[in-house]
Image: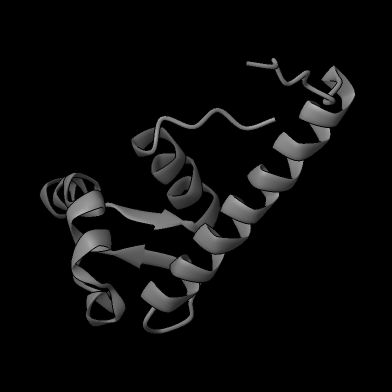
Length: 93
């Protein structure tokens, strides 16, 4: 069998990672805006549009939502994105 040589360089891998990271952040930003039921820039457990979430997303975010409920947290978009990235075990940039 022939071995396939990788054509990617460290620079290409870095740029690809940046594109993937930017896409993840954009998707999480959009999700935040879907959850922000009153469009005030913060979400809390009791003021959140959870109906827009499918079952997979609800399951993935249940620990975050439970923590928000127990501590009566209100979080902004950046905090939400960072928490989601931690849950997903993703290190950006």
